[in-house]
Structure formats: C-alpha cells, structure tokens
Length: 203
Image 1 (tube, rainbow, N blue to C red):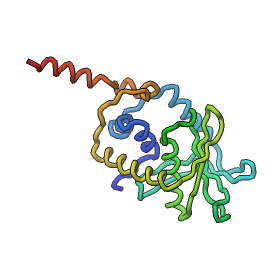
Image 2 (image 1 turned 135 degrees about the vertical axis):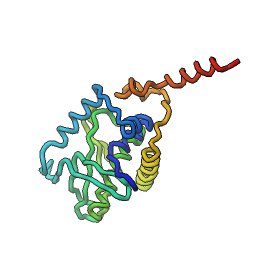
Image 3 (image 1 turned 90 degrees about the vertical axis):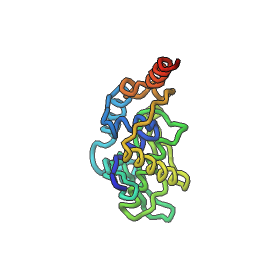
Image 4 (image 1 turned 135 degrees about the horizontal axis):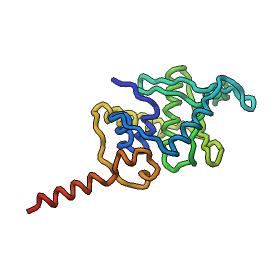
C-alpha cells in the first residue's frame, strides 16, 4: 500500500463511504453525543498498562500496524489466551458504546486488528471479542476465512477511494440520523439541487 491509514478509517468506510471520505479526504470532523460517548469509553478502556482480569493477562492501548493492509492503530485491549494448539495467542478486545449489530462493521474492524497482530508477531490469532456498552457484555468473534477476505476486500476499496481523493455522493438513509457529520454532508441536498437545476434547463 502506498499510504498507511488509521484503522478507524476502515470502520468509517464500512459505516458509510461518504462519511469516510469527508473525514479522511476532506478533513471534516464534528462531534455529537454518540462520538463523545464512544471516545470516553475508549479512553477508559485504554487507561492503564498491563494487568490481569480473572487470571487472564491483559495489555491495553496496544499499537498496531500492517504494511500489507496499509493500516495502523491501537487495540483497546489484547489478552493472552490459550489457542487451538494449547499455546497462548493474542486475543484482541474492542470496546463499542452501542449495541451488537447485524452488519459486520465492527467484526471486520476487529479482524483487521487481528491481522495486524499476526503480521507483527508472526502468530495466528483465531478469535477476539467486542465489548458493547449498552448490554455491557462481550460478543465473541471468530476470524474465519469469509471475515478475513472481507477485511482484505474492504481495505483495497478504502485505499482506492482515498488515493483517488474521491468523495462519494450522499445516499440518504437511516444511518444519517446518528451521524455526527450530517450537517456537513447534507444528505439529499445535492439531489434536490440537481433536480432544481435540471428543471431550469428543460425547455
């Protein structure tokens, strides 16, 4: 990859390519209640260094990087747990403020963290977990072949969009309601303007 992007860019891209381009191409950022709550949750998760939880070794705010995927970032928590072969394997844990989702956005982001760990450490990372703030419980995530392939595919798409410096047109939908960039994005506006201009040009 010609350019290394933050892991957060991958999650932004999965949520909405236009949101991702506004943040990482046009450098637009606005905060709302949801982003502020998420930021505070990550700060709490990242606080402190190595420790133990229920006898499991934990390391917090672990730097990550993959030159192959062109990604860098920080894992909230990496635990050491017995792998399939009985040896200890890294077990990434990502903290999210909301609830579990049907879509794979969060699972793809976590799998990307696992692929970074694999490249950095030369080990296999078979699974991890996402801690969701609303139910206050973990969701176990197995890093199977389809999920790994999704990470590879979306990373290629993300880099292509960023390298082209192309901001997609807005696609209004239910995701717009919770987006902190709604005012900057103006979903639906460009279509209305285009329709207005077209009426003016029609004979």
